[in-house]
Structure formats: structure tokens, C-alpha cells
Image 1 (tube, each protein chain N blue to C red):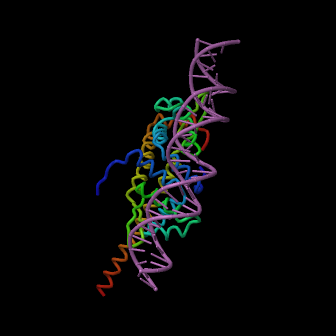
Image 2 (image 1 turned 180 degrees about the vertical axis):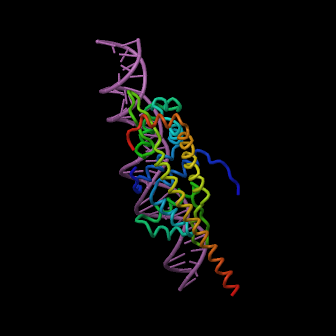
Image 3 (image 1 turned 135 degrees about the vertical axis):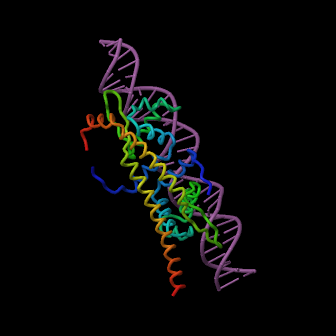
Length: 116
Length: 116
DNA sequence: ATAACGTACAACCAAATGGTTGTATATGAA
DNA sequence: TTCATATACAACCATTTGGTTGTACGTTAT
């Protein structure tokens, strides 16, 4: 498998795609099994075309793949992309944790903080 | 610290906020130390007002806090929110992993049947 | 007291987003 | 062949987004 760094616009598209409850629900559903677009659309109170557009957004964000199977298009998750996004957020946590390790920062925070 | 479940629209706002390279850069910068809005704005090729709006989006997404300090407003990261988002994505990875385990189980069952 | 600084916010604009309906096309079933 | 199904996509629309400029206001420095 080829692993390359995500570009800014790829990351934009990933988070943009995840910023919608319907699309997150679609991602959830296809995590456990492939679903046709029609099967997915049955769960939402919107037109088929709208759901199809959501799938397209997810596909362009590399969060799902579509695999034609007869006249159906099977939507499957791309767990690698979800993993990349997770790693990105964990990197933020790492950077923050390293800051916390700096002793002078801890002392400064103790002095400044009144809330808990 | 009070921990409660994130609502759909809170999650929407978090990922929406992260879906912009400028805002992700702001998040990165404030991870290691608080920055005034003006200090942040110096790094970007856009108006101060635009940067201020980005900070506002991050604040509404609970990704940063603003703390007034004289005439400056210190922007700091809310690592808990970043952690929640990370956890959410890890949950997706978990669900996917369990699916993979189920497939392993099925294969194992087949093997057992063959053996008996 | 006055000037400069840091921030906030309104009004405006172009482009993107999230939905709709309608139409076209390919595949599978009868 | 004909009909129903699954998908694709264009055109349209209202709202949101990401930027701008201009103005106002509290705080600090001179």
C-alpha cells in the first residue's frame, strides 16, 4: 500500500465531509458492511439525489469507495483515511502533551488558573 | 471537569472548524502557547478581521478559548475537544476492527467445522 | 488628554453547500 | 423486447462560508 502525506486540501475535504451528521451516519453504516446507495438512502428523510451527493462528497474525501456490482454501487469505508484523520488529531494531542511536560509552563498555569 | 456527550451539531461545528487550513494552523500555534489575535493574524495573508472570524469559528467549535488579558485576547487550545474528536474517529476504527474480527471468527468457525 | 493599539462587529460580496426536481442511462427481470 | 430498478447528473434555489472594508470602543502609552 502506498502511503503519502495528505495535502491541505485533502485534509480540508476529509473534515468537511465529516462535518455533517448524515454523512457521519453513512460512514458508520458502511464500516460494518457495504451498502448500495439506495439501501443507504432508505434511512434518511431526504431525496435519493441528496444522499447520492453525500456519498459523492465522502468519496471525494477518500472516506468511502464505490464498487459497481451489477446495477448496484456498493459503498464501502476507507478505514485508512479515517485513520489518517485520527492520527492528525492525535498529533495535536502529542504536541500539547509535550508542552505540558515543560515544567515552567505547569508552574505558570498553576498561577494563572482559577477554574477547574 | 464536566464531561457530557457531544451533540450532532457540536460535532458538526468541530469538524467544520477543522476543515480549513488556516484554522488548523491557528490550532497548531496555540497548542504550545497562548497567542493574541493580532499575533496570530501576522502569520496569514489576509485581513485581521478574517483571522478574527476564524478564531471565532474555532471558539464556537469549542476548539479554543479566549482569555482577556489587558487589551489583548489570549487564544488557547481546548485539548479536551480535540481529544473528543480524536476519540470519535478512533471509535470508527474500533467498529471497523470488530468487523474484521467477526470475519476472522467466521473463518475460524469454518475451520472448526471442517475439522469435526 | 491624546494618540496608538487590540479587538469587535456590521455590511457587503462571491463562491460553496445542501437541498430540491427532472431527465437520462445502464442493468436485471419478465 | 419491455418494464422496473439503481444510479448519475444538470439546473435551480436558499443559506452558509470566507473573505473584504469601515467604524466603534476599551485599554495602554506618551
